[in-house]
Image (cartoon, rainbow, N blue to C red):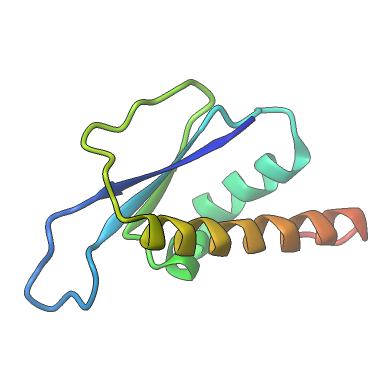
Length: 99
């Protein structure tokens, strides 16, 4: 089961909220949704812009993010947005379309 982690980055002077990198680990290589997700990230980093992340990193292995302490509210907001993206991609794949 894939996990979502957030690596908070140092806040810059122009940042309204803390910048972060979204880290998804334990992602199955052979699941069509994750293949599509990786392809989208490689092509245009669309996922990062949708969730407000500086970048998104996807790993098949387990990755422990150091200092992975962010507020519960912020974590819930990011996880909800990512969940919506995955659900949209899943529906698209089930209907025979691409992501």
